[in-house]
Length: 366
Image (cartoon, rainbow, N blue to C red; front, side):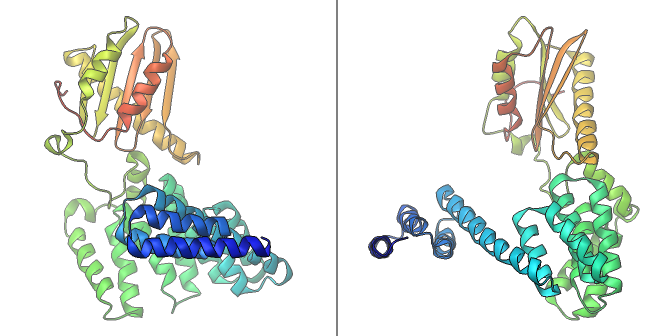
């Protein structure tokens, strides 16, 4: 920026700050943050947004500005670290570089650097960063292979870092989020040896011990727990599926299903949430069998795409002599349409809306 532009930017930012002092509204915080965006000062944008979000935590504009500023800040630091690593790939630089890459979501690049780091130096900390990469992949894609690899690499890293708690933290996160309580208890026991008396660790240890006392959870190995996460797409610490009474409130699913099924080419329209299903176009045992099969299709597809490293599926289209079956898979609910011919564009849009819905009202449940 030219000298004049810098002076103007500072003046506009001061003026916006005075307005904000009189009225600390979300709009005025956003106005000040945008002035810093124009000035190219990502640090000030992030500072203002962080302060603002404490007062206005649900403001979308402030969240978006904070995310953009954080991304810019990380990108700048990343470029500097990459230049340093090319000239002098010392452990301190590689450590921070891998950390920034993981925070930025550049997991493939982080693993590549950590693998080369370990190959050149046999530094156990390089294994730790590989473990963190696989843990992040597991948390994002729910692939059991990544969870197992993260746990294994963290264990190997701890062998060479007996006084460092970070490998144990990775093990605990993978195990506890998966519901493998015996492994979570083991990791916490070692953490408490390193940090005796830590109140947060002791509270977590009491919770894990309570979970280990139930027969169902005690018998679940790490492998079984990871496979369950892959199959269901849900972690042990996810919020439980709401009951029918909790789910009923926001939208009327039945009228939309009915509208879809009124098309003469549509044989059935289905909405699934947890163990509950709402079906239009079919009745009785046929409706129950169809909803159960569609639920199995969703679960099998999710498991297959995670094993292939493709992430979360959003749509499944099956075509054959029966016609076409389109399934739209949301995070908590799914919907499907079975047509005698091809699926229409408006039906696809309606299914996506249904899959993202938080609740259902009306209609007989199967």
